[in-house]
Length: 450
Image (cartoon, helix red, strand yellow):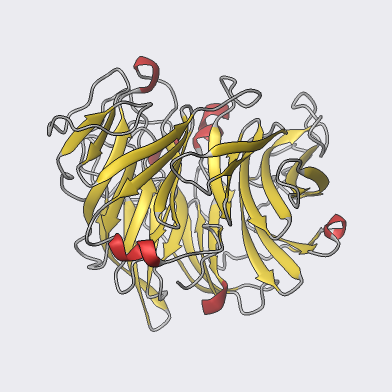
């Protein structure tokens, strides 16, 4: 769910005191100094520890085989990668085991799972829909669908072409039909795959008993006031909350609140902007009772160092909105307060709620700013309660760090672009009640009440 590749191709106060640990080993006690080594050593707050690490492995460990998004189902974690995807057995979170890897190159291969189906987002024109396609010919982009009934041997099923491809996607299940909202940037004049105009999202219908029949069934325009951004039109990311019949869309220059009572015909409830503080509306997260929405700003598209004293704390941050009488009102901002080096790309990125009943707590990736756990129960006074981060990757200057950090059944899983899969545990009175919550599956862009 990142805009960094688009650019490559074309607050809160300080956090808790930290301690160092090996980037590869389980934690050990260390210094309370909150600074960082330049050799990549891990630093954590005292209430967070790294319990497992699995490096990227062939064939998905090339220089541009970046780890991307995460999804979960039962005892399995699914990690997208620019080269394909990996399935891990996490029945023992402290000893994840690789079950299978599928080579299927494309940008950016964001992943979600539903029943026996896995869906990948392809945001790159390629010669064809199959995994054997290449980027030399720019004829096709969209969604790829796999059968994962056998986790050891996933099978390609079909693909669906969508305008401007699929940067990210969001599942909205409806009985035996799975609707998928496709978000993508555009347009690109003279492009075969991304013609202007592009002020739409697209809705793909996947019959779960006949996924080969998947097709685009709607292309709703969700910008009554139209978009006005130099970056791109269309949406970057949509989070759906089907139980509440709501969705929140981060659409580059706009935030949009949607009524999804009819998933094929979403209705705009509110469209709003923050041109002073937001550059790229990146993603959205509801709190558990849907009385708040967090919108994040991916200032610089993920490639820049924005977690420093030169960048205002309201930029490259999270904006906290309260939802009252059907309208969103901004109440506060949150940004990590730990100063990052000028060689570390750092900005708000993918995160999820930690299921603490009666509280609003979130874990979030910040690229080379690491992983942050923060409390926004008081919308106007959010605070960081824990963190995990490494020093600059490769001496600095490279795109690296945590792409996605999500909480699932007692542990935090971080998909690190270069380093691989990290498993973290937080031991804190505020988050301890979440350890009792068990989810059968978890796709972050499709929220469920816990």
